[in-house]
Structure formats: C-alpha cells, structure tokens
Length: 537
Image 1 (tube, rainbow, N blue to C red):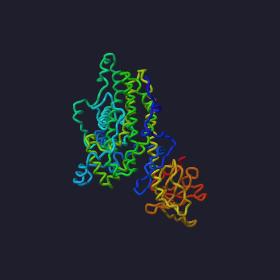
Image 2: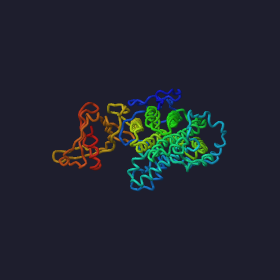
Image 3: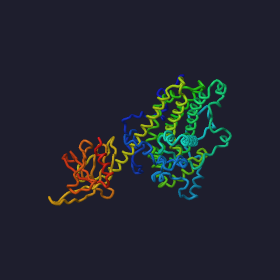
Image 4: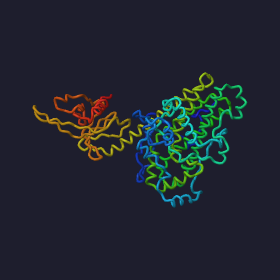
C-alpha cells in the first residue's frame, strides 16, 4: 500500500511547526506580568531539557488525576505509585466549588451567545467509519485505565506499573460521568472491526487470533477519532472563545492553549491515513508504517505542548485565584453541552494522555501480531513514540531546572565575591541544603570549635557556599564542579569534632586560590549523601 509521508504533505501556514532540535533551548518566560512588554513569542517554552531521571511523573506532578486516584482505592494502600502530595492537592482545584456569587454566574450565562466565539475551528478531516458513536476521549481514556486496573488486580501490581507508564502525570477529573447526547444514547459506545460491513463477510475465513489482531488495530482508529472529537471541542468551546480572549492577555492565551491547533491538525492527518489504509484493505497490516510516517509531526507538536503543560497548570491556578471574571466565564463554558461535563483541565491534558496511550495500543497490536509476517515495523513504531516521550521528559526536567535558576538568581547576593552567571544552559541542581561550618581554634592543649551556618547549592558544574539571610543567600565562595572540588574524611577525634564532620577542598575558588572548609551534617546519613554527591564525577 502507498502512503503519503508526513514530510511530503503540504501544510497550511498556520499549521507549520518548527523542527525540534535536540540541542535547542528557547528562553523561558518564568512568570506572567501584565506590565512586562514581552509578547507571546518571547515566552515560548524551552524545547530541550537535561536533568535528573525522575521524569515527567515528577516534573509535572501538579497535573493531578482524581480519576486514577479514585480507582486506586481498590489497590493495596501501601503502594506509593498513586500517592497524592500536598502540592497535588493544592493544584486539584474544583472550579465548581469556588466561592462566587450566583448572580455573577447568572449574568455570565445571559451574555449574548453570538459574541462568545469570534471564530470556529473546522476539522479538515472527520472519521468516515466512526461518527456519532465515538465518545469524548476523556471517557475513552477512563474506560481504558479501568481495564488496566482490572488487569493489574488479576496479574499483579507490576502489570499496572508497566501499563500506566508515567503514573504521576495524571489527568484532571471530570465533574461527573459524561452525558451522552440523545443521538449517542441510541448507538453503541465503541465500534468494533468485526461490525464493519466490509469485515462481516471475512469473519468465517479468519481465525480468532487474526480477528483479535484486527480489533487491536481498529482500536487505534477508534481512539484517534475519539481524541480528535475532544480536541475539536477544546478548540471551539475554549480556545476560540471571544470572552476568554477579552480577559486574557496574548501571553496568557498562548500559554494556556499552546500549540493545541497544530496538535489537532496532526491528529486529523494521522486519522486520515489510518482510515485510508482501512479503506484500501479491510484486513489491516501497516499501522506501524503509518505511525513511523507521522513520527516527525508527532515530535514537532507533542514535545512543545507537553513541555508547556506545567505552565498551563500554574496559569489556570493563578487565574482562578486572581481573576474573578475568568472563573465565572470558565464555569459557563464548561456547562456547554459539547463538553459533556468535562473541565478545561481535562481537555488540556489530552495530548499527554494520547501520546502515552499510543504506546500501549501499539504494544497490544505487537502482542497479537506475533507470527504474522505481514504486520511490519511495530517495534520501530513503539520505539519512535517512546523516544518522543523521553524527549518530553528531558524538556520538562530542564524547564524545571531553568525556572529554579531564574528564581535563585533573584535571591543570590555575591556582594564581596566575584559574581558569576547562574542561568546557564545545561545547568541543573544536584543537591542543596544547610550544613554547619566548624571553625577550630584554641591552643596545643585545648581545641575550641565554633559553628557557623552555611548553605550549599551543588549543581552539575558549580558549587556555591552561602550564608542564608532570610530568603536571600550571601555567597561566601564558589568553585567549578567537579574539577575544583574534592571531599574527604577528617581525623575528628584529634580535633574533637562531631562524627558527622567532613573536609571540603576547593582547589581553585572564586579568587583562584585553594581553600578548605570543615563541615558538619545533621546526621550520618546526610553526611554520606553529601560525600556521595560531592565526589560525583
């Protein structure tokens, strides 16, 4: 079968996305300020990160999922996989419970509907096989995760870890189960491959495993159609809303919706190619090839979108707390029947849910395709999607590191020490915390040890030693790490030092001289952690 490769297809000017280079870092806009003259172009999220390996699950932990958390009650309580931190709880803001006058909500509802949207997003391709029967992707995803949890209870908890992939990156909860329109109430929720008119005549010639393979491939189409349906709702109800545009700055609107339009266009083209393959041969075999044809466009839209998600979450929380009009308008928009009681947050999380779910769908196809020589490139397709997820992981981690450096740069005072730039590409924090600097004095008979608080910031390329004064850090010394830093034990008994002591050498400090510090940790465990970090190469 012949397929049109993504890079050969002509794109509308509005759909073009720059190729994401692995070494490219775009400046971060750490906070939104109406008095800041920067435009949305100045505040594009960085597209390359390199930090610790905790991954997306840690970096975007604020994007919480009450759906997954609710279902976790059926799992062992001892598991930490689905634990909710206080930060998650703070970010799980229920829009419907915010205190606002009913009269304000009523007035917002009375705004002329004709002024709500100044434009409408029109899909360039809609599914030929799955139309009114397809649910919103939130409902599809919810049912899919329920199946994962059911399988986990039967096969063990490790199965869930494999299935969910990045469990702490979660979706926002729907207010209540989705409400189907009158048309949808009379059709099946999910179409099956064997129900297609073209397939019914072939069922007798296929074995049960072959039919299961076709169903697994068809689920990729069904789920993509569901995903596209939700994206179009997000575009038309929220992103195209004239009311939201009136109360949001250009920067806020850009951060809130990012490149959602481009994500939607890529989904349309992917669905079009999948259904074109189905139209040409109802017994499908080339889903892996189609995914590979689209891997570049997936990377171009999903990497920047997922990288921007932490700013989406922070902005929504900020707007709900500080902009009363936003809260009122948002509640009104979420009541739109097209939303089926789903929140804005549940729509904004969709691209992350989709790219992670796609790996599972492809793995299910591969599992059922063993022994079928006609099914090609599935392993390569899975690896391609996993590489995209890994790049998203790196980007999010580096974004967090960059934001940390931007905030720290405002708090650091070099005062009597030669200043150095803190915000540097590739720099990330390894460890930080307070220690005691031990100053040994006295005479040959008696040693006197005095203590002074000192705070250490250890980065992958720099060591800062500071005195903490309130929220500020007065830098006392700094050195390049690891080439000019070494740590070792010390003969503490002779000097009367505590067991948690260690000796820190700076071979070349801020004024290019050699110096040493006797430091004491709070516990032996903390001492061992510092020695390990300071000895790292």
